[in-house]
Length: 79
Image (cartoon, rainbow, N blue to C red; front, side, top):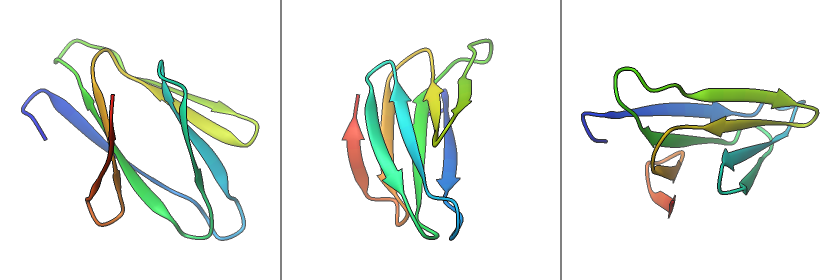
């Protein structure tokens, strides 16, 4: 994690699986059971991060690069 980044943890509930979409790249991850993952966004102190809930999922969009990690912290993708 850089000094200008934010890390957000997303976790599904056993009875409420959902899709996590990383914008603007359109990459999706399906979280089921109690599965969790992290999204790390490059952002400055005044940059906005957008979270949008939609039927069956959540989208996250930041102003710069993004990285995704599994629940153990292993890198999945870099955008």
